[in-house]
Structure formats: structure tokens, C-alpha cells
Amino acid sequence: MNEAYRAAAEVLRSGGIVALPTDTVYGLVAVAADRAAVERVYETKVRDPNQPMPIFVASIEQAELIAEVNDIARLLMQRFWPGALTIVLPKKPSYNTRAVAGGDTIGVRAPGDAALRELASQLGPLTGTSANIAGREECHTVDEVRAQLGGAVDLIVDAPVEATGQPSTIVDCTDASRVRVLRHGAISRGALLESLAGSAELV
Image 1 (cartoon, rainbow, N blue to C red):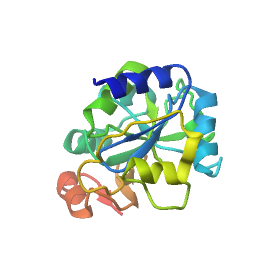
Image 2: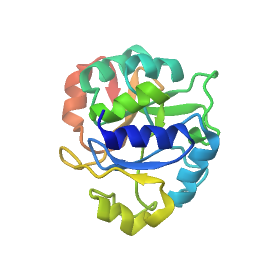
Image 3: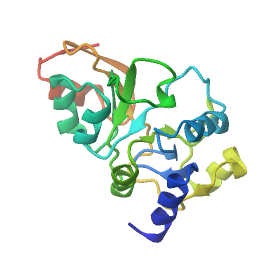
Image 4: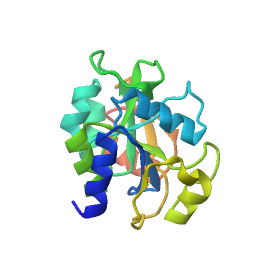
């Protein structure tokens, strides 16, 4: 992990929030178990406080600590993780985070960015929302983040956004027989269908 990400780890460990590049767009990251830090993410984004935020995890194993992972979800994780697929599942009752906005489901993703997965491995699951004002364009550069969020974040990591810059595709796998696409993004519907191979309906 380079110096910028070591600095990010220290900020996050001390309850701060960080904007950093992911494999899709710039993300706004806090330790998901830190209620005050997650609240700051909501305030910084001007996000509806009742709207849940996705969570970055380091691995399938870490996802299994916070979500009830069924066979269909595991199949998609094995195919598309690390990568741009967010999977909504029932939340484990033992895991508490402000990011679920009081709900009983949780959206999880292991990002393609190795440094980001390392942060999640060291610090625990992280908020995985985009670093922009809610409803405005996602950010792909430091300057774009600064223009939208100004000094509201404690640290902005200056590094390139990889790949297409498209947001992640979001699927709901709470019903193992029926996968619902909630948002179309970097993973195509065709790729999802091919991976499911008739194991579950895709709607």
C-alpha cells in the first residue's frame, strides 16, 4: 500500500471520511461500523438519510460476516468479484451499520481496486457510495470531487479512476430464485444471464 493509502487508512481509523478512486468512479469512504463517520458521509453527499448505502468488502469471506450469502449470490461473487457488481442480500442481525438506514438488507461489493480491498481488510467493511452530491454527476478526478464536495472530506486520494468509469451494476439476490437488476452499470445484463445459466430468473 502506498503512502497516500496509508494516510487514508489513518484518517479512516480515526473516524474521518476519504474520497478515493475506485474501479468505477470516485468513492466516498468511511468505516461502515463507525456511526458518526457514516452520518458525515450522508451529510456530505446531501443524501436522503433513509436511503441505504452500499458497502465495500475485501472478499467473499468478509461479505459472509455481514450478509446472509445464498448460493446464487455466491455464484455471482465468484464470477464478478473483485469487480463492479453490488449484490443486495439480507443483513446478518449481528452486524450494525448506519449505512443500511435501519433496513434489514445490505448491498455488498468487493471492488476491483486492490488498495481499496486492502483498506477494507485492515479496517473492516467501508461505505461504498460515490463521491458526489446526491443526484449530480459522479466524479472521475480530484478536481471534480473538490468542485462538488469542497473541504467537506478529510482527504482526497489523487489517483486515476480505472476501467470505464461506469458505476457498478446492482442486483438484488434476497430471493435466491429471482435476481432483480436494480441499476444497470458496468456489468451487462447479458453477462449476468450467462453466469446464472438458468440457475435463477433474471428480472
